[in-house]
Amino acid sequence: EVQLVESGGGLVQPGGSLRLSCAASGFTFSNYWMSWVRQAPGKGLGWVANLNQDGSDKYYADSVKGRFTISRDNGKNLLYLQMNSLRAEDTAVYYCARDRDGKDVWGQGTTVTVSS
Amino acid sequence: EIVLTQSPATLSLSPGERATLSCRASQSVSSYLAWYQQKPGQAPRLLIYDAYNRATGIPARFSGSGSGTDFTLTISSLEPEDFAVYYCQQRSNWPHTFGQGTKLEIK
Image (cartoon, rainbow over all chains, first blue to last red; front, side, top):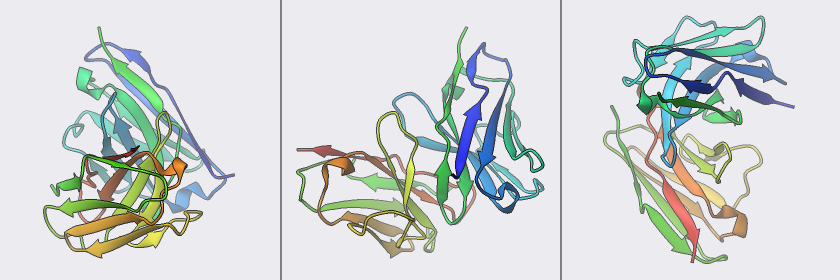
């Protein structure tokens, strides 16, 4: 079964850091671009970042550029999102997704809450 | 940044009716537009990619059309499970922006 499972969410204070992980299974992880997408409470979807197959090509939303870093370990079938200098407005459910012609496989999401 | 504007914000229809959802881009995205469905408490699901291609397992009642700046998602005859929020997203230019969503609710 093709599957993505996120982990690493939680409660963090403003200015803090968190690393999210996304474990892929059931497909050849190293063949695909991967994404992070977030959804603030009661709001729509927001694209966060994308990464190509070997990790050499990265793109970020302006709102997270310089604070978040997307990376991957193809040997472990893992996608990461390192989040630094977190702000209240980063509070959201974070989804990882596989990129094909669209985002055709999604994880169940992990919740990040930034609050003092 | 390409802005995607979805209309209407909310669409109230009954099962069996036809639904037409619109997504307009602030500049051409060619055919690089996808549609997603999201139900409460669930992850989004890919319905349509590259404007008119149905994703794997998506029923034929869902269809997409358009190119350039104007796109439409049509649900030919609504089933009870189709009431959800629908988003469009472009992958023509970075950042890969989403529209703000259309909520399809039961009338």
